[in-house]
Image (tube, rainbow, N blue to C red; front, side, top):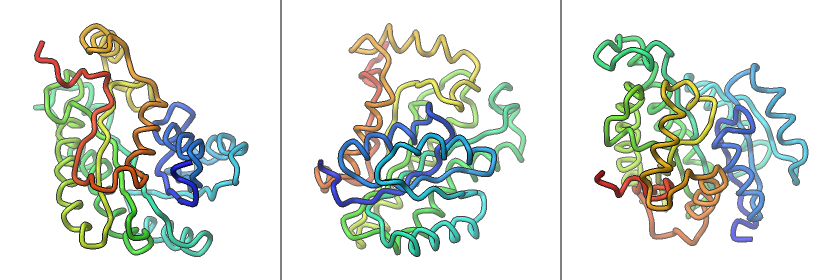
Length: 255
């Protein structure tokens, strides 16, 4: 029960296939208490149905990360209802569909802005706004992907966004180190999520990972959740500014 007595805020859960939901399940399994965020009214009913069997019953709240005011409001609600937290999980990314279907060179200015604002700046904003309610020794986590380092066909502007996200992890780790708050990223292999299914050729990507990874398989949602538990716990107290791969070893392969 390495997270016993710890309270972790997780943003944003969309459905049962969300990586954020896998992390929430692992946190609870290892003794932690969760706070669950969702993006907007569209996801509210689904998320409330998901959490109904969790114990203790979590605080569930809306958080539109494209607005600093909405992030501030979410922070105030958490502080009022539960007090301080011990960890923050940012599992949020978005790019307009056309930006994922067209070659990267054709990415228009607005699609680029949206992808970077939602997928990267929201992480910076949430870290800044929430840091005052994170207990010393706390941990902040975000989710990235190998497309930040290597070209993944059809990942396009999201690869650029993930590169910026990983750089943000390092700079935030430096800024928040004096507050004894750690900042890290998890880079999972491909998982079937709402976002991943929007990438053309996703099924082929799963097959390629199975064939070429040292473990000769795809990863499971649970494995990402359990890695998050490690990074949220005192077991990782000396780790900050890092990207941890959970991809069955795919990233180490040259060919």
